[in-house]
Length: 368
Ligand SMILES: Nc1ncnc2c1ncn2[C@@H]1O[C@H](COP(=O)(O)OP(=O)(O)O)[C@@H](O)[C@H]1O
Ligand SMILES: [Mg+2]
Image (cartoon, rainbow, N blue to C red; front, side):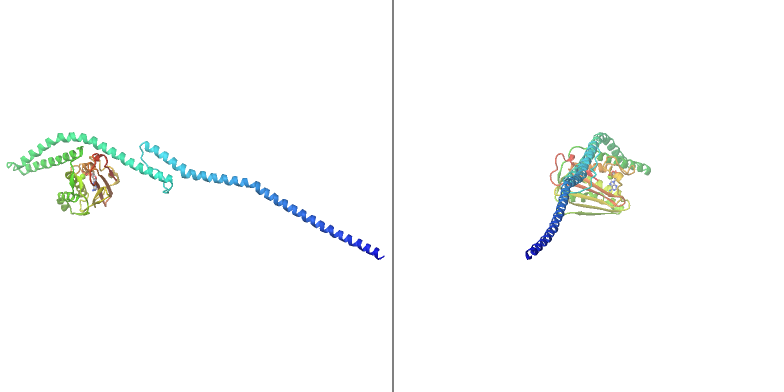
């Protein structure tokens, strides 16, 4: 009885246990299924990510390529196109710099900077060549005429002088007329002297010269005129300047022409300031500054041309600066000019220190 009960009791326990086991088993199966779904989802997500990665990389690659291409175009192709276009213009004779405003340290910027410098040099050399040819052509032409005119004008001058000295010429009107002839012959003689100075092609003889002496002696020649017009003259010359190799008469002519122009530009008075200093190891720089009318940009580019004058007939021949230019050139130097309307003008003469080379006349130029 007890056994039956117990076996019956045993049967109940096993049923419960079985139920329990089933429930737990189901939970385990559910859990396993959930885990499987989760894993599958993760694997799916991971697969999707792995498969999408190449597309993302591709998109980034395309974007980067476009960016690099754009940078390449802006930094290399565009400047190269500008360089090509400018080279074509330069070869056609239009000397314009490359319009590129970046001043970086990269190779393209350095190339453009170097090109623009070379182009500036070419332009100045071209202008110099044109000017030299013009001067050479006019020089040959004028030298012939000047030689031919020199003798008759000398004769006119001497005859007029003899006439004026003649005691029998007491009529004041007659004396005035002869004086006029004398003045005009003197002026014509001066023009001829300038023309001959300007057209002489051989190099003058050079000696050791002190620039202070040359300037002071030349200033004495215009002392009367500066005093009459109320013009002050100031000289500032460094005491340690070395002597230069030059021709005294030529240098006197150079400064005389500059002083006379300065005086003409200050009819109501003003100041002429002369500074001389070392411009570099190789050159002396002499500035002749006035406080006169100044030169407009329209005239400035022509002032070194022979016969270019803004002065009335009888007052200017347009030869002063052309002669100055040609003499400075013979000394292996160059001229710079800066001017401001109604404020004044500065001419800067650069003269080499030491030996002047044989082909000095081919190396000088003028700069504005
Ligand atoms: N210091 C100056 N101030 C103003 N204008 C000047 C000066 N120097 C030269 N010029 C201008 O340059 C022109 C040419 O000068 P130049 O060759 O000496 O000839 P000229 O004196 O006979 O006119 C002058 O007519 C004048 O217009
Ligand atoms: Mg003059």
